[in-house]
Amino acid sequence: MQTQPSVIVVGAGPVGLLLAGDLAAAGVPVTLLEKRPRRISNLSRAFVLHARTLEQLDARGLADELEAAGRPLSSLRLFGRLSIDLSTLPSRFNHLLVIPQYEVEKVLRRRAVEAGVDIRHEAELTGLTQDMDGVTVELRTADGRTRSLRAAYAVGTDGMRSAVREAIGLPFPGRSAIRSVVLADVRLAEEPENLLTVNAVGDAFAFLAPFGDGYHRVIAWNRARDVPDSEPLDLDEVREVTRLALGRDFGMHDARWMSRFHSDERQVPAYRVGRVFLAGDAAHVHTPAGGQGMNTGLQDAANLGWKLAAVVRGHADRALLDSYQSERHPVGRAVLRSSGGIVRLAMAKSPWTLALRAALTGFLNSVGPARRRAVGEITGIGYRYPAPRGAHRLTGTRVPDVALEGGRLHEALRGGRFVLIAPEAYRDGGGRADRLTVEHWRSGRGTTVLVRPDGYVAWAAESADPAAIEQALTAHVGSR
Image 1 (cartoon, rainbow, N blue to C red):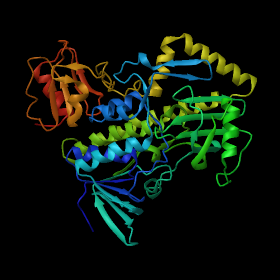
Image 2: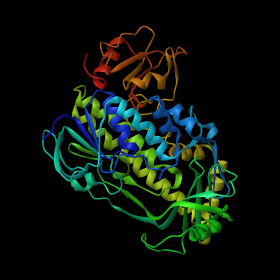
Image 3: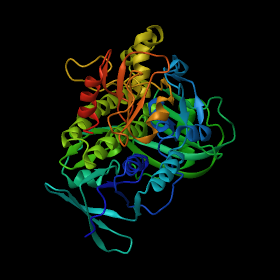
Image 4: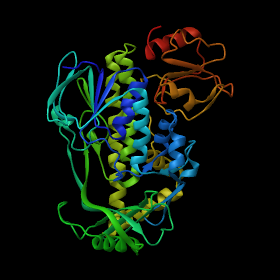
């Protein structure tokens, strides 16, 4: 039995790669298990990165590379009438980045490997047990042998059919929201006018997005053709439903891949059971509307990684791990509601649902605060985490990429440490250089803010003396 890792992560998609990379960068030994062979598939599921995810990636020094590989989109149009202007987002990334999932995986994999993650392919989880001291994982390797691996904690990032979730006995309640959705990767004879093309008419819905290699992904659905996922699919059917929804099929040809799938809305009741955690699609799945799936999972990983590292390294009590559930479960629930709502409105058919869609569209177009709230949820920048009673109003909020004496906040966060934005007179950090970066406002602002490694406020005060700062650092960052 091997005992090297402190954390075992199961599933080497984007969520698992980000989490494992964060742990390794923090000095935590981590093994990443993946049942697939070692390769990056170009059969991508996700196609967009939202502002909050790009901010998290910027805090790891990865966003600029992905921005260069993708294509920004500053506005969206839904239901024909609802215009969403992303250029007004209070973020350096005031747009949506169109980029295939496999490009994101390439960057995250490279970072994980450079940080020292032990990635094991063709290692399929066959069993998992836990006790008071750790977790034992049973896995089957490429040679057919069964082996055991022991760690302090384990995280399942292994998708909708999570073997980790099944092993810990968690239900996955919910339902199928859309059946018989067709997917195809095709070449187009006619280039669409917009970077993303999406529309719904009557019983049909279709979405087009570019890979960047000459192919486009088509996601389409015809309410009138409800067949099992196993039903054969040909390009003529893809063309037909696309024409119904978009008015034309753009001369689709040379399909390199086609499939059917059904889209579920599900969420586990608990993201943690003892020493085992779930993140990404293993914890929540929803419709692809709004492009929030991969983004929500990556933000799960950003929330969990620094907490696990702090506990493993002895700088925080294990009670900190409980906050993963209290902070991320409500976000997952909200994403289920918003993505499901978009789909239901897009596919409105009855007179009353069409009237509801028209009323909502008009409301969001004309009422700025409501539109900003909706955009904040879709892009992820509008969420805040629960704060203790009596805490400063900033506690739990996302901190924008503010200007500091030493540069930008996201640059200061790249060490994976807390960032204390302190009064000019406070500079030493109390001997916590391995966990804390001390910075100062470029503007001379007086508010003292302790920013967590994931970019949210842990503690703040309008005027704080060294004793108050030291107390806050001990509580959140750990003793000297």
